[in-house]
Length: 394
Image 1: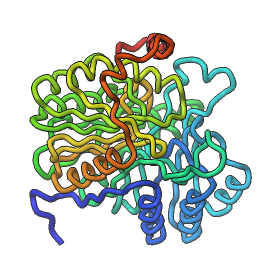
Image 2: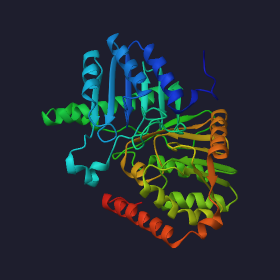
Image 3: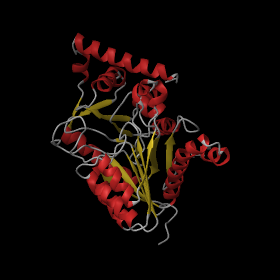
């Protein structure tokens, strides 16, 4: 069926691993030619096993299956699964393997944080969801009481090719490292060249895949956020698991709130890492003073990296609004001008706010004790020092 000019993309919002993994497994089981997968974490427990089994079933049918995992988020695969993948024909590469104390060098903080999948160049998936069961967390014993809050989108149409090209380029770059070592420079240098991206504000029906890397796309995701926030007229609703934006992005939020836009942030209330949580709280004062509403999510862990502007523009992806995502990691976000999908996402976020979050009371924040203030200031200073070590302006 032909797509109309105002609806060139077939996009569907997926909430949590429950939705995403079922859709991915269905697509993989129908695959005839190729499956590509990138993820920061691949956990071989719970629902992650369903995805692993689907990858092996596809490979054993003769489908080419290529998977890239991050060297810190996943590391080397468990021996049992590495053996099974190899026997089935699943090809696995580890992006930037962690090497002992070398990980503490700033240059080793550049991780693969994207969560992408393409099947047969026909359907793609992009979001913030790792291959990790919604009720499991590496930092918690046993099951979570409520599922982790996170989102992805499934895609058909023009963005599938963009996603496919992005993923095959990374695979080629990983392979090029071997070619460089063997002095085969010509094909290696072809693989190291980046692709161009469109950063214009999407018109009705348009959607873009926006990347962040350390070559040609260093600030594209942040600039996309700033464009959308700057264009907002009525409402900004933003959820970020890790929130420590730089000066320009904070200024954009403050300016929007001061010109009468309702700005609501959904941030972590139940946290995995104390330092990023306390550093984020150090920023609350400036935002609250401008009229920004801050809600902390307590029902479970918040892992979402999404935003909706004016009920029309949305982004769903892997990029948090913190230095790790905006300065160092490889990230991928889908950005679209799609009122139907935007309002679906907004309704889900509003439900999360009403059912699972607590609004930060401005007066209570101002009256917090000296010890809390010191911890927040120290956490912020540590995070800023880490940014300083990278040598990048923020």
